[in-house]
Image (tube, rainbow, N blue to C red; front, side, top):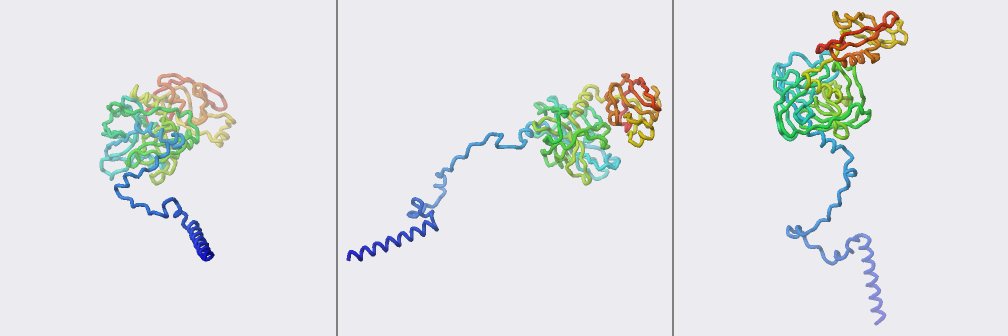
Length: 396
């Protein structure tokens, strides 16, 4: 009898162990404490309020949390404004299209021909008393200019002055407690530096795009008379004109001006006027109402290797004088077409762009010595510099 009971007990233990092994293999969660004995009570609205969630982990340091440029955007964005300029119906096409250049001035959407134009652009507040920088083509011919800040405030802007040859304009608004962008140093930029473009593209609201400095000193693009552009691949679109190009610290390094585009949209090639140029122009406009530049009255040609060989110039570098304006400073001093101009004051010149910049930097009514090569002889002339007339093309 005892043997039979022991056999029944052994069989029961064996079966129990087998069941336990199967459960442990297939449903291990059933063996957690209490789960296989009692089902949990259903969660109701009353009990849900008593459930405590685990605490959130501590926030990492800012340098760990973000690797972007949120701080730079926060620093510069409040000083970037939207500009609405009301203009008379246009009489001519976009000047880039007139000259056949594939450049687009990202100002705003055009209205039907014959209708009053309301263009959208951007601007940058550069002083607490309400001085703004924007592009000349944004406000050119405008009868009414409205400025809207990111905090929602609006004001009518006064046009202080323009400089079409650099495509810059200075506006003034009368508001208190204005945000001001910090001015950077464009001369310290290097290709590959990170930059942000801030503006109001397509009137969707203030937008920040990022990119790098793609090139420096871009000129001879046919966009402006005086060109020294910062090229960037940060997206610039219609409405961005006059907006800010800032560095990784949120400091203004350029005024967004034009894009290379065959469709009107961004292709990743944008151009900005360096802040150093913008500062000089703004200072002159605020002081005198316009920018005074030197002028000597010559028309120039690039000295190509073929021309240098034909003229037997050897290794001499300079700018070929293609024409001289009648009764201009150069004509009165004795400079003639065919002369090779090699120096203006203390500055050697090797290209028309260098000559243009060197002469423009001279104060009107000053005197300067220029050096030329004529028929193999080195000559020098004293010129009385005059003020450059507005909107001259290919003349110094």
